Image (cartoon, rainbow, N blue to C red):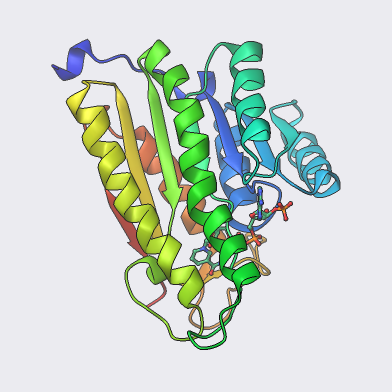
Length: 244
Ligand SMILES: NC(=O)c1ccc[n+]([C@@H]2O[C@H](COP(=O)([O-])OP(=O)(O)OC[C@H]3O[C@@H](n4cnc5c(N)ncnc54)[C@H](OP(=O)(O)O)[C@@H]3O)[C@@H](O)[C@H]2O)c1
């Protein structure tokens, strides 16, 4: 489709879901999107953390743009409810940031059933489940961006976290299939992947210096806003971002 025929929408009019938006990278993403004027639903398990984050960002902006939502991404009913509630309230889900994730450091020999189930269910199955439920809403509006937070550990294997590497690699494979699907179906939906190295989620204030070898989290947020701002027919496929 010609670029001019593709629907566009300023970030200030967009509605985003950021999973794991109460802490770390997700919080920086949420703050950046809300600062650009968008509405941002931050979703994860710990409601008190989400509430505090939303209150702090909203107070800083002097406007209510960040909304907490309790979600365990592993639970299908909660995933479906989140998407239906957000669409029901604003008639749009424009941006989905699949940021929730965790690692259980267990070596190949010592990996436990509980460990890998938690990591696979959160980092891969949960994302696929959420995309499946959000995608029809994006198709309905013929507009959307899906942003996956994989990792450098989604491109290189590390002996201390095999059960983390596996779903992060898997997420990139899934994203490729998703990108092929939206291309074949002619949907105005883009799929981006972040593959960051170490990101400092402790020294996050603008005036703080990240630890050696770590990226300041603000770079993730700036890159997200930049990637979303590109012409609708342009996709920054894999964003490999790390400290030199
Ligand atoms: N920091 C790094 O160096 C780095 C590097 C590469 C990739 N990453 C990736 O970046 C993403 C964000 O990580 P982070 O560093 O910002 O760490 P973080 O602060 O621990 O963020 C992870 C988020 O995931 C949420 N989460 C975990 N389990 C969940 C579940 N079952 N349902 C819904 N949400 C869940 C957590 O919230 P609740 O506990 O409230 O559920 C938390 O907000 C992750 O995918 C991580 O793998 C991080």
